[in-house]
Length: 116
View 1 (cartoon, rainbow, N blue to C red):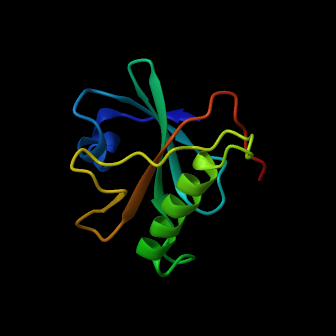
View 2: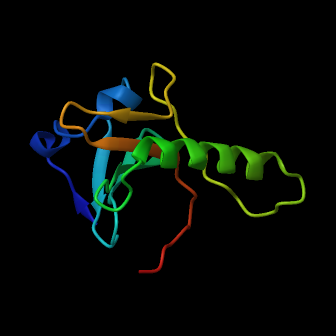
């Protein structure tokens, strides 16, 4: 993981998700998306730029993820912790920036790991 500088943070859509100052740490172990751990006070989030070379229909993928996570979270028989889709400040599940990058954000699950 690598701490991002203020200059690098200006390229991220942070203001779309957070009104306060946040700390951003790039997670460099992923293989598909650009992934960042965002620390906002006591809260932690995963911010990802969707790789549209792999996922051509990024908006549809993001909509499907929102449906699946909501379904799993509401199932009383499903006992694994499910990350929540974090909406932008104006209520959207994702954002497309001026450079056509698609971004999504999830709640961070403490102690979670991923295998690459």
